[in-house]
Image (cartoon, rainbow, N blue to C red; front, side):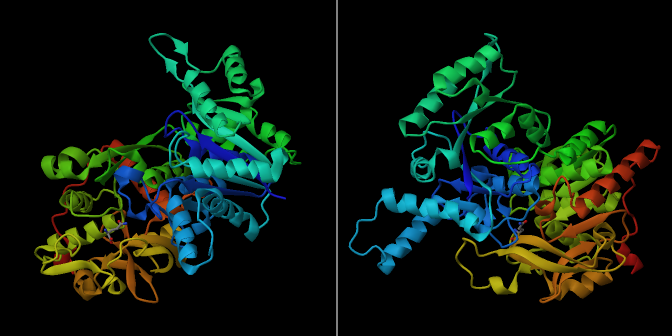
Length: 553
Ligand code: GLN
């Protein structure tokens, strides 16, 4: 019999509910239990794929090609599993399914209503992961903040779950904020009281309060929160700010969270084995040297847009025993101030994925700077495309070479629409999405990093290296080192005449895990660390490459 843990959030958004749910999952898994995790988002978009990063942050793509909430990324990283469509559910999907049923006549004669039809559909989605495999504990995170109109059907559905599955099999964890007012030097419990009051009004009494706080919560504060919110003092758990998200499971364990959950749900489970998490944390703290990586993108003021990139860099740093300082560089600033001013200090340059024309020239300049100065470079999706554009323009001398995404009339569309994207006019879920195989060339940097000849990586794009230019670009010195064999799509490009320059059409950051850092991020950080050592040994950044490979070819 599956037990359910429902995670809700109160007071403000961005409290780290996803990290909390992931950490609960990690702790239960470390006690030998089978765990599933699922995010239910109350917005009406069918998936976040059509939302701007300003609205939503990163769109996380799974192996099966679902465009999901970035919390699914945390689930995968913390639990070291691959998830899929069923792990990310939106109100848009729920209503879409109901309206299709209504049109088919499935409800014939009845009025279709939020209760029971919408709530039934939500409950069916929550049960789906437990039907496919044996799950001891299903953790369900409800997106949004208690009090939002959109969340109500979801909260009603979990209220019904308690009724149907009883107190023994369901549990409500509420993540809330307990602010510390600096001026008054006081910890304030009122926002938490209000949030819990709101939950109780709709029939949900939380079992555990996870209290986000900047300072430790004294015993009397926990007692007060417990009293006013109708939970025992032990169930008020401090979730104090920690230096890294990977410390959270360890901190929750010290606060007694996993013990409380297994006790309340009467689960028989062994003691947790958190050695791998402790080792990761120890390695992270032990790092002494710091490398600097500049990430040149267009949403750099908005960290959630590059969540998985940041995490994969962290994993790569720990794998190499170094701290990584990420400098977020707005690509439009590169256009204004020049690459030299903004990027010369970096030991590595990374250009992440993105869409649209704004800031592209800054990214092309950044790729050129990395190529010229022989600074380690990782280009991801759009970043790879910008590297190809730079190479085509400045080495292969294809004047005004561009991607047809940014310049429809370019004389040299070195990046062009994927053949099967012609005629696609619907925007939702129509890109090349999900995992595809990639065959890697022997002797390449990518092959060295991966250590194997075939990999599967996740994609999210409409444009692609134009094979009509492959010969000319290869003759000029560009190396195609990864291909999707079935359609000969170019997946990886490199410049052999460079310490470490790799561009990939896929998104390696989506498969990096703390316990299993992505090979390309491990290799990239290793190369940046070599660049740091070289510079510290007195070597200046390399001078511009005066003899481009084109003249040598
Ligand atoms: N805009 C580019 C494309 O659609 C790159 C996409 C991306 O970086 N994810 O091909």
